[in-house]
Length: 114
Length: 115
Image (cartoon, rainbow over all chains, first blue to last red; front, side, top):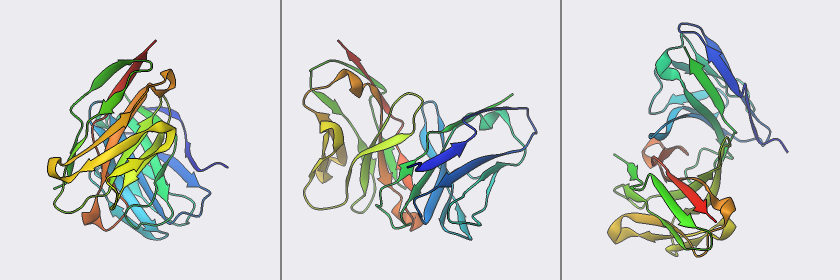
């Protein structure tokens, strides 16, 4: 019972490099999202999706790109990494996009940009 | 705009003592409110949630929370803390304005439990 799986767990990037954080869920959930967690700031929403082919911006979308070609996968792309993107990234999912559904979180991806 | 305030950055309690973690929210309508717990190096786990009805909500691991509209608060409580409760706790409010299942989080309260 995998739930929400994120890869990689740890990554170090150089400024200007691009990379993709992978997120997959095996619960047939329609809603998926990405949050970033920074010290003293809680979690902030980057992008979200209420179903395959549908994505939208959250609170802090700049510098990130997403797509949702399948129900299972919701990758987060960093186009040109900056030190300000050093953070812990969490992928999350819920059965639907209806507010109030229980949200399940992955274990996080630690990203350092040097 | 919605916001969530957790005024206590760090709380230390003795094992067996009672616990109350504070959470205040700002939202015009009846909010969806949540408490999550995060153990070191782990993702977030839902402890409990409130949508409507009974203002005292029971959750997992012996936690409960009380919604007080007059105080815009949703404080988390546990009558007797165990060493395994040491973690970071996040209060969150549903971002209903987006029409989707998005959350606004507080900045978290780190709980230390001393033997």
